[in-house]
Length: 174
Image 1 (cartoon, one colour):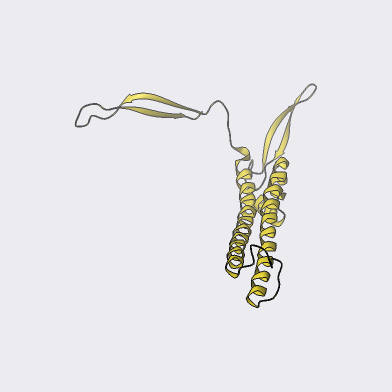
Image 2: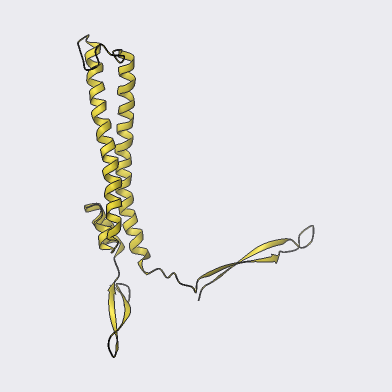
């Protein structure tokens, strides 16, 4: 059951002669996260933050592109290494890389990079969903001048050497 004012916020729009309330939809955080998991960037659009979508696809696309490039290089060096062990000609025959140890090292390095970038792609996918969830939660967060934080010098409790100077923190919420 939803209580009043959880799903909608009221903005006041000034018309020609009267002030009329205008309802503004508050996004549901769980829905924003599910939308982002179903289609990357959909949660950001649902939250009204459409300008974040190019960043989502840029990060995801870049991570996947690097992972795919490492996959292709891994397969190239894997095949060359296998052929080298059979003493058959391969892509790197008669080059400086025509050595089983070098081919193995490159194969292993591209395999490690491939796995790392696939993992980073998954992390980026999850983070964009978390970002949509957090953004939906913070839509109605009040950030105005009534919030203030002040640092004031103060004297602390007396200790073995007498009064101790310090800094006090005062947070005013109005």
